[in-house]
Length: 100
Image (cartoon, rainbow, N blue to C red; front, side):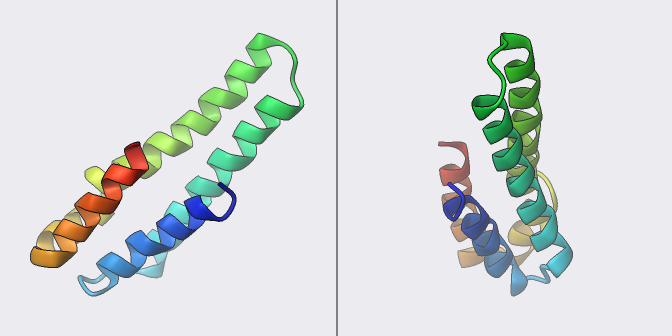
């Protein structure tokens, strides 16, 4: 996960770069993926109580849903759809991996 999730975020950036994707989008996605991974790990590894694990899990989940939103409805989706063709198709295919 530590490698694959940030790499997938880089792939979204590379797909949309031709359509005008900026490094700002890349850093938003990578930042959200780091938050997702770190908070999920903290909740799993350091807290035995359900309440604290749920809190950290909710933070991790919020970061995950932000990534999914960016890919399907946010800046990434808008750029991919404006480019159309293979860019939109590639974004949609990779977006499915993000929700699986």
